[in-house]
Amino acid sequence: MNMITINIDNQDIKVPETSTVLEAARNNGIDIPTLCYLKDVNEVGACRMCLVEVEGAKTLQTSCVLPVTEGMRIKTNTKKVREARKATLELILSNHDRECLTCARNKNCELQTLADDLGINEISFSGEKSVRPVDTSSPSIVRDPNKCILCGRCVSVCNKVQNVGVLAFTNRGYDTIVAPAFERGMNDIPCINCGQCISVCPVAALREKEEIDYVWEALDNTKKHVIVQTAPAVRAALGEEFGLKMGTRTTGKMVASLRKLGFDKVFDTDFGADLTIMEEGYELLGRLNNGGTLPMITSCSPGWVKYCELYYPEFLNNLSSCKSPAQMTGAVIKTYYAEKNGINPEDIYVVSVMPCSAKKFEADREELSNDGLQDVDAVLTTRELAKMIKESRIDFLKLEDEDFDEILGESTGASVIFGTTGGVMEAALRTVAEVVLERELEDVEFQQVRGVEGIKEATIELGDHTLNIAVAHSTGQASKLLDMVKNGEKEYHFIEIMGCSGGCVAGGGQPYIKAKDRWTKDIRKERAKALYGEDKDKKIRKSHENPMIKKIYDEFLEKPNSHKAHELLHTHYTKREKYIL
Image (cartoon, rainbow, N blue to C red):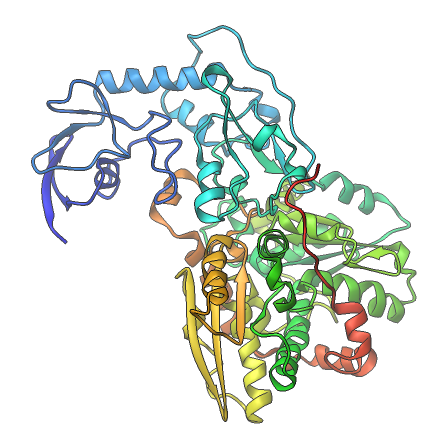
């Protein structure tokens, strides 16, 4: 790559000739503020916060879209630049709902942080302030146009990354807002509830629909037996809410905090992941051996499943019929656990702590119930759990590590990697390979499916069998992969798809990423390290070797894909209309 020399704030630096001024500055430790910028996703110069002074230019320039040139001289901190940034920020704030103390993003808001950094103590501009209704129609996402700063991040991630495109700029001038077409409710459009729009919103114009009050109500109800289960990815990110380094494992402290909150049992969704591998693995073998529909595609990610129902219904028969691990765990709690402990299933209240806002939508699906009872009663995001811990005045960092409750707290290394892209595939291969080969694997790590490349492919030789596999993460990458399958360009036996880029570790319910961390870290990799680390530390790393999985089949489910297993652990999906009229 050709390097050129530029000067930023009287410092000569060499940078790649393909850089923008913003990239050149930040890569050399010079911070330029931004609000709308998302690398490779939203590079449009809309917010005007990244203005710099360039020698020879008549006006201030937006550094996020300005290419560097040889000999360019740039100033990032002149009086003119500071005044322009302050004026721009005051204009944004002049039409913003500034009720910060009651805002979901208070003390974790990029706009608030920038106002503090730039010393905004008062708003010079006064005048008409727009007040619009808040959209609470979705079971997962709340859209508040009164907090929107028109940065366009959500529009770009929905269009470019997720390939859904249900958000856009509407109207003109002062009346411009970001909204679905014709200002429909979020529940009346083909939104997949993934929450990636929430993850990138710098303010609280988009946020999850909280279920904290429902959970508190259940915990306070002495007639309810309240059980909580936690997804693999939660333990890789929860610590960030309490100041820990990104990717710090907090499994033991997470369990301890949940007990302190008052839950009767603390179970691990990883148990459900091991159960999923048994059901899904044998389902795959059944399709391979009996001429079933191929490729078989995973169904763990509710955002991806809804995307398939809306945009690729021709692949619905390819979906595994398995419920997600969280729903399987809920189903087992209200049957096997209830029966073993003599508890009326109607008195059991199951709470799932998930990294995913789409899980809120999933829990409400009619298909995911048994005898009139939903498998899961409430879903908390990682952020919501952190709020409950803080509200309870629990000192998270000082908690002693504790273990999950038996039996549904026992899990393997295979299950914990479900939280990252490629993890479901790798976990399935560990079991399927040993079933087919009838011997123990020497190496259980399938490096071919690890990493954050958008689409990963591999050919796995299993004795006389050849398995063509693929892994895609984000529905945008999924659409590329499915189009290749449709067009006959690719032929696979097994595909893993996760709705969010990086998998669950980067789900729409995970802790917000600080602006500076977005530039310096890849959250997908950092959080995945925690899961791979926990996998390595587990004594048992294959789902079929989990003694509690063996126990539940012996005592209750009989065998993988049995009639009883199908009744409780499997489901079906149907084509959805894109718009509700």
